[in-house]
Image (cartoon, rainbow, N blue to C red; front, side, top):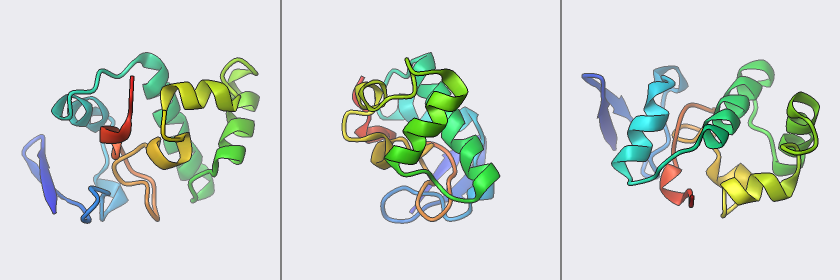
Length: 118
């Protein structure tokens, strides 16, 4: 599968995850959300970018427990807790958050944003 972004063809797997994490660009977050009728908040984008940065630093995507601890360390207890993350990502931050199109074996950008519920 694939999608078009800024005049480029971006290859994805059957679930919409990027095949090449280096294809990711921050602008994809809003574009893909709009394509799927999702209105992102600054809070969603903050978490997406946090997970993206986490992947860049540790070369792995965080499980929920690790994500919660890392968010708490970076942003305090009001954002570093499961309740906050599950409020943003109803089906689970580790499953949905995947910075999100590209977060399979490597983190990339913004799928499955289609799973996000605002």
